[in-house]
Length: 64
Picture (spheres, rainbow, N blue to C red):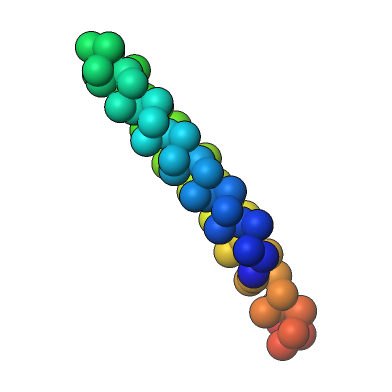
């Protein structure tokens, strides 16, 4: 696993947290929630891609 993935996830988390706070303070709770959900979906997509890569590596390693 690359350390870049962790930095990307951390950067997305910080960005989403800041945007969420700004939107909540502006009184736009609906958009704040959508921003948080979008951040979660993006991070989950990144993690699923890495898990898929891991499974492919295990399959080739054991000739399955």
